[in-house]
Length: 356
Ligand code: AN7
Image (cartoon, rainbow, N blue to C red; front, side, top):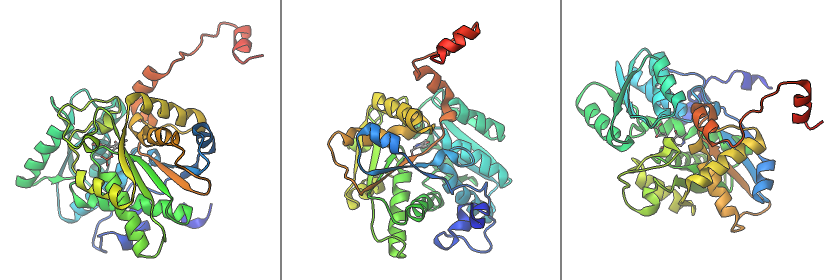
């Protein structure tokens, strides 16, 4: 490993020239970003894809999801502006990230989550970082509406992706992909929930092209869960439903920007069923040793779906962002795995299990 790699100290330091910060901005960081872009040849072969396939493993961020990229900037700017309280609505990962970064910045964090619909690991994170955990009986969309209204009238800073600093921070993932590959890939697959991330990646890729860092741009390929697919259906989904709780969102905040990203890049926004998401989730872990949470597998599920149409060619590069770590939702993993652990009572049991 070279010395610059060892000195990685987060996305604000790495990409300062591209971000709305000054020397006066107090940088609140957990050294997020710098995540690996992993070649995935066994997964590509299993999907029958000739292109080079890579996984951008965002589960390796400090709180286990891509949200940390946006949160370091949103919290640093909130601190610069003197905020004492921050708030977000969340399907889980935003709250985990806000809780960690807000605490590190010396602020009080409040999170509003849909009751019973967030993965346990994410709830544990919000608890551990001493945030005020509040629940709504409704879904994420209702929670977002509430925190937006309150933050407009009271001295509490909203750190959902409506806060423009969030997407500014998140765009650095596109910079990293270009820096790691030497140019933008042919296709970029990712899950779509509130639609901030696809918007941020597209902004990042375009900025990098304007600065001469990549000559090409990828096709942006976003995937919603079929039970929570307002953009695909063209209408708000009042009661979104999917096992991928992170993307259980019926009225995305960045809806129009996401549609524009897909259109301008000649990509698409489509949907995948829960069965397709679960199959992809197990394939990524089973073929590549990479564990992501169910929602994170929606992009790969989309790739699996399209690969049947023979769209992808040799010499092309495909990047799939895995947005969050699998340990966030260990409950779901155990529920959806077919095989319980075998009981071993003797050496002969063990030898039999090993196939000897
Ligand atoms: C693992 O935490 O919206 O389309 O409140 O946690 O940018 O919303 C999470 C979203 C994908 C969707 N994968 O990204 C929240 C929240 C994971 C996520 C998404 C989320 P966006």
